[in-house]
Image 1 (cartoon, rainbow, N blue to C red):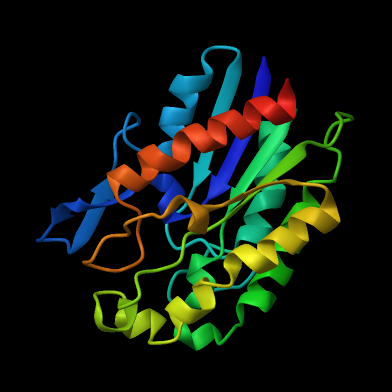
Image 2 (tube, rainbow, N blue to C red; image 1 turned 60 degrees about the vertical axis):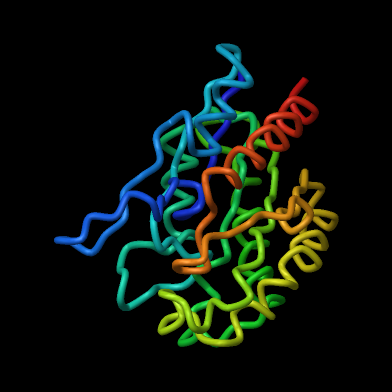
Length: 218
């Protein structure tokens, strides 16, 4: 059996803007058959152990004072240790660093992602280090600055997100990772918050990831 860790944020967790709980002002999760890691699990079958480690508001490598305990770099060390042995780690992070108060360029966000890729080269408990599949997140909605997420992400998030593919690809090439650029999949991105993938977007991403996992592990 191949052990695959999928490490991400709300767009991996399956944040669903159609499941709103008004009294709590929160949105619930897509089902396993709707979110892309669950669909990947179904497509690959029982020979693959798909481990989901997805956390809403998870960053690449920064501490968010409004969402503590969500630093992806710190959390990855624990996840690699807990889930060893691993054959592959799939990483999709970066959107939360687009928040205006972080004031980071796409290039600097990718610099942080490279730290995560390097962390995956660590051997835990004597097992070989896993391969890495890096996914560049899809661009936000062009109007994110005036949508629900606008107060946090601001008017420049979209322009920065357009550069994810370029910089993440460079990281993947330097580090010998597999690579998927969500920008090439033409996601629709919801028009409520301008940030989260729709169910159709999850369904579009899943077979691409499943095929890449097979390519890298078979």
